[in-house]
Image 1 (cartoon, one colour):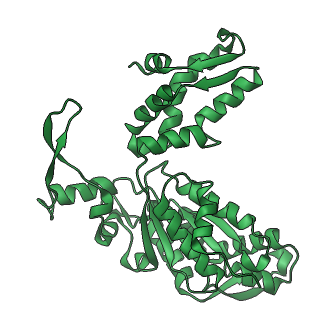
Image 2 (cartoon, rainbow, N blue to C red; image 1 turned 30 degrees about the horizontal axis):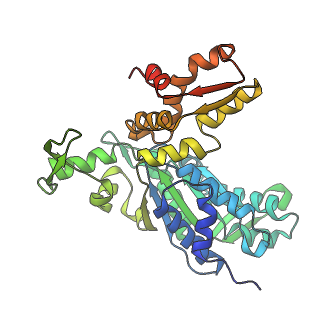
Length: 354
């Protein structure tokens, strides 16, 4: 039997699809390596603004699993929106909807194996819970019963090793008990407002005065005082309690991973290398017209710099900025000549109003 791959090897595979976010890549790689060895694996909670790569990380793990040739070294994986958990809780069968999805995915992945084998695979699957911040226990100071039910439903599934479920018709339709003790949960959310809440705590709230101003040199050499705040340095579990995740719920996540805000250099790399970037899509469009689209390094840097001014949008800001650049050019592509189009800094500045 071949030795299971090590975390570094898994990280290298994930890194081919994920730009940056090495802390999250490492944490997921360690969890997957432990799972390959049949060891206990702690659940992971990821906190990151929109566009920082949460979905990309999930897709990278999904692709890595799909490439595993040995069925013994792979498991079914599903992605589920957090609100689905509240819907299933209202039907008094917490966990069944997730287990049925895992069972169906196991059948797709491993074929017509005996139901018992597929159930064992389903009970050892991976569950990505997206937008977990949407199931907070309160919103605007009022209780959020949907969020409370959803947290309780997920907690029930995580805590219970023996979970009852009704098999789908193709599997016989009988009531069975599934050992869910080997499931791995990765929950992720943007947690809008968390940054501001923690910042307020350390500047005007209970920990006022903890954040000290630092001397910063400006572009012209002048020195000024600036508060340099990083959520990574100041976030506590208590902040997540205050946000609306219950202590019992959070206690089931061994790892808390904060995704980095995308800096200018990372945005440049995404813009140039992501196959789904606005640049890649524009090149495909112009190529269909027989036109080769090129862009200068200075122009790329200017697009990334503009996108970096919208940190709450992450990589999505790149597409918004580049659309402003390309809208008129794509509207009248006949304006290009010679089968080539070069975008340089002046064109970018004109489009962005710089």
